[in-house]
Image 1 (cartoon, rainbow, N blue to C red):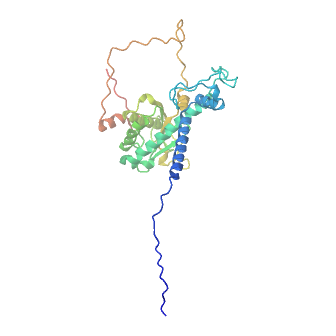
Image 2: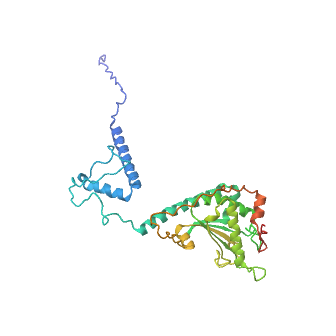
Image 3: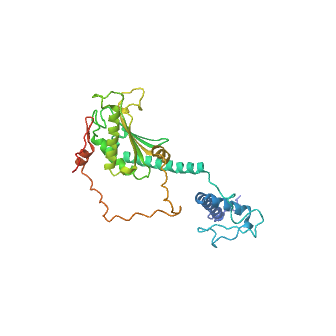
Amino acid sequence: MENNQPIIVKRVKRFGDGHHGGAWKIAFADFATAMMAFFLVLWLLSTATPEQKIAIAGYFKDPIGFSESGTPYIIDLGGSPQLAPEKTINPEVKSEPTPDTSIQLDQDKVESMAEQVERERLELLLQELQNKVEENPQLQKFKDQILFEITQDGLRIQIMDAENRPMFDLGSARLQPYFEDILLAMADTIKAVPNKISISGHTDAKPYAGTGEFGNWELSANRANAARRALVAGGYPDSQVARVVGYASSSLFDRANPLNPVNRRIDIIVLTKKAQRSIEGEQPQPAAPEGAPAGDAAPAPAPATTAPPSEPEPMQPRELRQKLNIFEDGVLKMDEPKQ
């Protein structure tokens, strides 16, 4: 018997995926708008003064009590909202602040903020000096002898002797060429900040081999002054040097080993304003002449008729080295007086 059962063939049609909706774009746009508004608020908070912050807080507490700002734009870069006492719902708000309600900034807070700004400036200077030592092939060889640190008095730069690499000739204040290169390279970077510097010389505990009239105290002071001369020759203003002092072996770097070469060092401190005032002292303001009003300034002196002196031409390295090394074997050689 033949099988006449029909054969059924199913054909399935395949279609591509349907188009997704654009809801994610709206969500992403909302997120981007929220982030923009968030960073805008952070920027405004970082640039606004304390008075402006108080005024903004007062606006949100009592919006009716503020009139329109001085500009029709949403962000007013040229003014700030003004109080409108006739519209305020808070009768205690006044249009003009009285001396009792005016903002009085605490003197300690102001000094603390100034010290913080100064510390950040010194930290940037420290980073720049470290980068210069790392990037300069001549200075990179001596990076183990150069230490940087932030102290209470400012940024301290310590340049120390090594076992086979002294900064000065033995027993004298005659600079070695590599030490001159370090000071000359640092002069341009240090003078970029307005802070003054203090230079101090240190020796180890080994007694000075010489007469009793010259010892480690004189030697350390002479070496500090020789470092000052090198910085000035490198372009650092001499008026920015607040102090040059010698400590001999009274402040050892390695107290456990007083004869360690690292005890022979030169310290350069970029002073904070507080440390500078401690060194120089507060200078009294000049008194006004009798009979003159307190607000009137004294007349300025007549300008000089002579032309300002021209800047000296930079000296050659050999001439510079001869000019700097005026100390030899612990004896100070003075130039002959000019007639």
